[in-house]
Image (tube, rainbow, N blue to C red):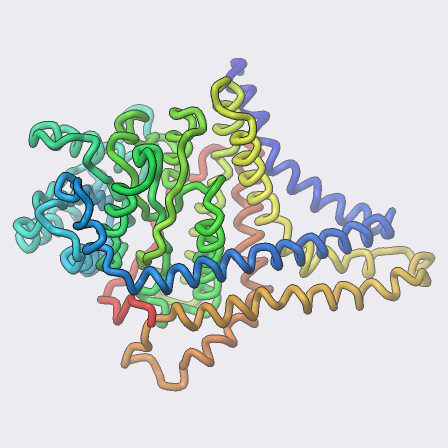
Length: 503
C-alpha cells in the first residue's frame, strides 16, 4: 500500500472507529463502571437538549423567511437589475430509468417558471447502460419540449469510462462538458451562466430561477457561491408511509436549520452554481457517490476557502421513495438514507485537501471539519444513546450499584430531559403541517393534517431505524475498506403528482 493510500485509509477509519468505540464502551462501562456511563448519559442528554434549543430558533428563522420569500415577485426584482438580460440558466437533468411521467412533470415545472424560456438551456442526460429505455423517452421529450426553451440538449453518458463509478456524478460530469462545448459554440459568456444540477423528479417553484438570478446579480463575488433552495418531498407525500414522511420532513428541517446559519454549510440534493466555478474545478468528480456536497468542497478547496452557500428560501419539490409495498418502501428509505450517510466519504477528502492547502484560513478548515465530523458522529450515535444505550446501566449494572441514589434518580432526570427535548418534536410537527401540500382527492378524508401530526409519535423508531442504523452501516463499510457503497437510484413514482405546492 503506497503512502497516499495509507493516509486515505487512516482517515477512512476514523469516523467509523469513533462510532464503534462509543457503542462498545456503552456496554463495557454499563457493566464495569456504570456510574461513569450514567454521568456520560446525563451530560450527553443535556448536550442534546441544548442542541435542540439552539437549533430551534434557526428553523423558525428559516420558516419565517421562507413564508416571506414565497410572496415576493422575484422576476420583477431581477428584471430591474442592469445585467438581467445577460444571464442564462442551464438545467442538468440526469436520468437512468425514471418513468416518462416523472420527466414530463419536471419539464412542465420548468415551463411554468416565470423566468424567460429563451434564456434557459435544458439538458436531459441518459446513461449508456440504460440507452434502450432512455432514447424512446428522450425522443418524446424532444418532440414535446424541444422548441419551448432556448435549447434542449440530449446526452448519453457512455458506460464503463475509465476512472468512473456508476452514479449521478459521472453523468453530470459528462453533461457539463457537453453543455460547455455548446455554450462556447453559441458565444455565450461563461461568466453569465448559472447551472442547476437537479434530480430528474425535481419540481421547481415558478420563481426559483428568478430568485437565483437576483441573488447572483446582487451578492458580492457571485462566482464564489452555490445557491441552495429549500428541499421538500411533496410530489407524492400523501401516498408515502408515515415513517418515510417523518424522515423526509426531518431532512427538510435539517436543511432549513443550515440555511439560516449558512457559514460552514455544504450543498445538498438539487441546487445551483455558476458555470465559471464548474469550469475552474473541471466539473464534478466521477468516482464519488455524494456529488452534491463534493462539488461544493471542490469549489471550497479550489478557491482556498473563499467559497460559500447563498440560501434560496424557495422550494424545489421531489419524490419520496416509492417501491410498491409498505415494506419495500421502508427498505428503499433505508438504502436512500445509507447513500446520504455515505457523505462520510467527504471526510478523508477534506482532511487531505485542507492539510495541503496553506492558503486556506485555519478557521475555515476547523469549521468545516468540525461540522462534518460532529454531524456524522451524532447522526450515528444520538438516536441509540438517547433511546436505547442510555438504559444499559440500569439493565447491566451489578446489584451493588443499584442502591445508589444516582441510580434511583437518574431515570427520572433523563425522563424530564427528554420531555423538555420534545419541544423540538412538537415544533417540527407544527411546522410540517404548514409545509404539507393540499390533500389529493383520492386520499381518504380522515387523513387530515391533524392526523398527520400523530405520525411524529414514530420519531424514536424512525430516528433509530432510518437514522442511526444506515449511518452506522455506511461508516462501518468505509472503516472496513469494503469498497465503495455504490450509487443506488431511489425508486420514483409512476403516476403524476397530485400537488406539490405547500399551502
